[in-house]
Length: 216
Length: 216
DNA sequence: TGTTGTGAATCTCTTCACAGCT
DNA sequence: AGCTGTGAAGAGATTCACAACA
Image (tube, rainbow over all chains, first blue to last red; front, side, top):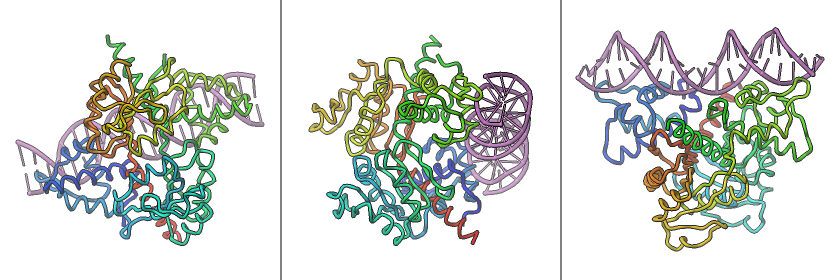
């Protein structure tokens, strides 16, 4: 029961903090200061403290934060207690990479089914996960009460897949297809657009060079 | 020669606008209004106009923006005139997916070399791109004056790869490995962290359900 | 009329700075 | 002394709202 709504960036950072905390716990560290956590997570001490305000966790002056408890507190906000089941649509290069990447990484997030329009893939286990034909999407999603879908199909099929996921009851979509998807306001959409990310990097890399030249 | 520095989100949206504009141009559309472009790009009309202020492009009341010229103007800011060469480090699942995804998509952004620690991959063409052994990284990057690198190796190798890329002269990094990388301030780092993106989606999907329950 | 460009207001996010605690 | 929690300031991003224009 969140005390208040967490904002987008805060959620992303809490996820990072938890990852760092788990590593610290595994190393036997029991307490951590905000500036240490910030350093390991790539942020600032003030921001760490501000983010932790958001989940109502309190540390102790001169001792810092209890590593294990803080990780647990973050999980209390981020995780569904029974775990979140996810479906992955599209088993091409991107879909398989995502599947392999996510497999067994986060116990509370499991991909329970995948879908592909290729009939040769359907019916088989791919990377340990059953692959269904596209026509079974609505059925699997609604019967298993799936709330999250991942779209890894080509751009021209993405809107159709999004519509079908939404219709089947999904409330959040992680999209890897380039382009803009329209979803109802009650569905959270996050698009990881590789091309755009690379164009951003190329732009700022060039800016960096131009600044260096300007200084010279 | 940018009139002013563009900010992160503006650059990302300009990239989206351009993609939309190119599609419109291919469909024979010659003029577009800010609210139309906004609709196609998933934003607001005011934001489109504000973003275009940033690149100094002016439209005309009652006619809107010249599709072809605007696309060209955006390219003038985002692209290096001679194109940007990129290297990709790590040819596992993620690396190959990124390579396949990017191949031929943006003519001004080309992956000219890839690297992998697996000696069986090195020396071969993978997806049309020469794959080198890791030890040649510094040489290839510095000799070809590569400014942008993509990291697609496992988390425990990512910092080492980042260090080597930076040392070889890269100014921007697109990172797919989970975790925090340290790079000098003059290097632009963009991390696409799939796990964190999925945790965000799962969180907000759950929030959406809780709001629906609260309303009922 | 219906659009653009933009100052001003608003909203969101980050950083500062310091009282209060141990 | 050295840390946390947080009000307040600052920076950044978005939206409002309207004059100017075709």
